[in-house]
Image (cartoon, rainbow, N blue to C red):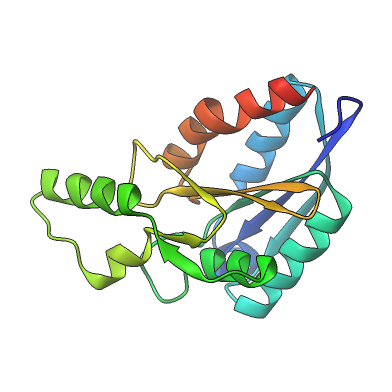
Length: 177
């Protein structure tokens, strides 16, 4: 990200957003927070839970903007495809992050639940990406570099996404502006 005007794109992922079943409050909140640190959100995109479309959106946005923030699609269900789309966009395999897997296991155990294969998927990340701790839920976020862009992928629930932005994304943006 350049020290001049930093522009960002926000990709909100989920059939429920595209179909109008859920209001996309994440993009509005993110744009406001970005503006507070001097980052201009130049584009908002909403996309359905479709692997190829998410991959194409990530590729296109990363080619146009130095910062891309994706929300949604990191949970344990079959339609949570963001990590897979990011890995495909990066041309990298998914690998298990052992620290993320341990954190997920601990959070589930604290709730009296066991980790299933579906939960373990949440600990997967593209090989060169880093996971971002989620203190409010089981789905870690991701931080990756795609070309010249920094890409953050964060969970969709605002109660999980917002603290992660405050703790991990905004400090990165402040350092870049």
